[in-house]
Amino acid sequence: MIDATSSITSVVSGLGSIAGSSSSSTTTNSPAASAATATADFGQTMAAVASDAMKTMRTAESVSTAGIAGKTSVQQVVESVMAAQETLQTALAIRDKAVAAYQEVSRMSI
Image (cartoon, rainbow, N blue to C red; front, side, top):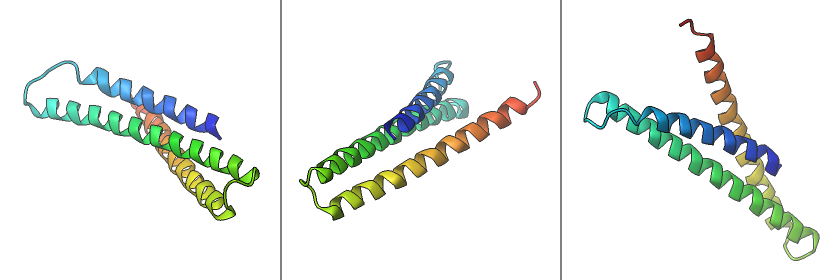
């Protein structure tokens, strides 16, 4: 489960580096500069979402382990696992959209 979110984190990091490289050309107050800044902010936002997803997955794993040891209630284990499941589904949906966008751009003629 952690490996899946690690691969998503690497995809998001790649998106952030692409966004960061496109914003280094100008620093004027033109609309293009505003768009480049917004792109960098998108990359930072996606990186924050990925790190939050990793935190949720790790929390669910530790709560599950504590539940097996009898240190945590069943309700806490279920809530934690359900939160991790929702987070993973969201991360996979974001990944699918990013892959679809990449494929669409790669099909464009130059």
